[in-house]
Image 1 (cartoon, rainbow, N blue to C red):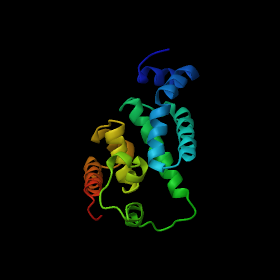
Image 2 (image 1 turned 60 degrees about the horizontal axis):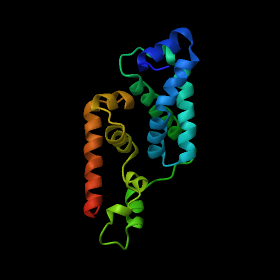
Image 3 (image 1 turned 90 degrees about the horizontal axis):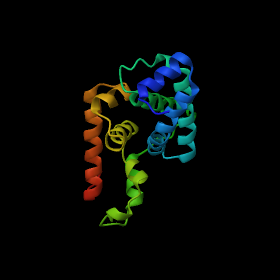
Amino acid sequence: MQGSDTLLASQAALAGDKDAFCHLVERYQSPVRRFLLYLSGNEELSKDIAQETFIRAWLGIGSFRALSKFSTWLFRIAYNVFCDFERSKKVFEPIDENINFANQIADTKQIDVTNIDFETVLNLLKPAERAAALLFYQEDRSVKEIAHIMNIPAGTVKSHLARGREKLIKFFRNDEL
């Protein structure tokens, strides 16, 4: 069954059509998992959070009103599930973002861009900056969509993107962070 996201979501919501919802899961499973993998840095955790995302989407499909794209609604659920997980962690360790960066390139004068691990570079960014950058550059979401997904003002999204770009530029120029 092919169809627009809105039609499939409507069939799932109004008729309880599990097949329609399964098509949506098939369509968005990879993008949601990829987003969560780069957000969390943990493959198993990203799979668990993705599964929880789709469970919550199924349970809440009746609340989808097509005021935004289905994918925006779904990514908002994924982001919220990830944030819920982060808040529920029992042990909080202070993280010094500069230590991770310094340890990885301590004795290096030149950075070989071809050998850089994408996840390592993403870890230079704060979680909100990382989420905004992933949604903007990897998932091709607009600032307005990201603002809706992250439940923050568009100006804050722009700030996260600008700070993230600045950190990455400094990294690739091998400047001090």
